[in-house]
Figure 1 (cartoon, rainbow, N blue to C red):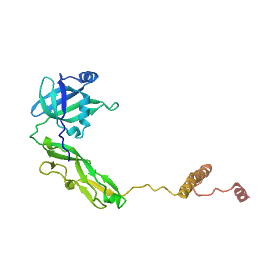
Figure 2 (figure 1 turned 60 degrees about the vertical axis):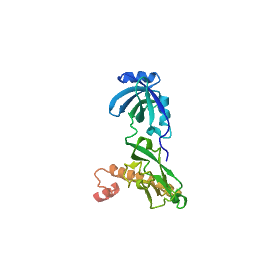
Figure 3 (figure 1 turned 180 degrees about the vertical axis):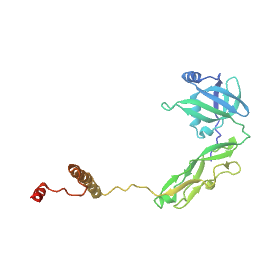
Figure 4 (figure 1 turned 90 degrees about the vertical axis):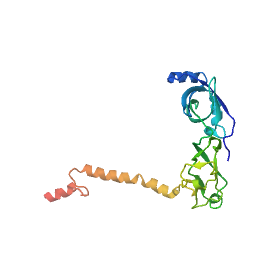
Length: 245
């Protein structure tokens, strides 16, 4: 279980808080606006290099990475990324939120769950492995944040469910906040859509236009004989002439 031990330094420059136009000018200058807060100190607006931020987000520990934030001409502190925004079309970073971190105080983070091994229910029973829970919330010291929680699914078969309580972790360092009974993964059947038989499709296509034609024909007969009850046959003119005689 890997931990966030990568040595990273994120450089920042302090800036004067402003409106959206100010933030837009920051981005036009090749930087992204950000805010640093936490540790009982006042929040600080900063500008950052988007390439350095992207490098951290794409690292093994991702947004859970603890790094050194060096503000030019100002403070130097341990920090982590707690929120970020992307431009939807160009996928470029728009804004970043940073939090000061005290290495001797626990914090709560979400950690991905990675399934390992080949499930017996897939290999021997022909089922498919379905992962229900992809992240667990944990509480630990910053230096103990795992990059992922690995789960062995090799013995998973039909009728058996892997739960949070089954996940292996160092209980002395990491405490799960997520409910222990929460399902993580199980084996399910392959869902296939049964295609209708060719002759059934042909019969259905042939029968489809027949019904509206019958209905249309019956409607025309009724409309053509005004005052005649539905289902009652109108008398022929020849018959009426004989009755008069």
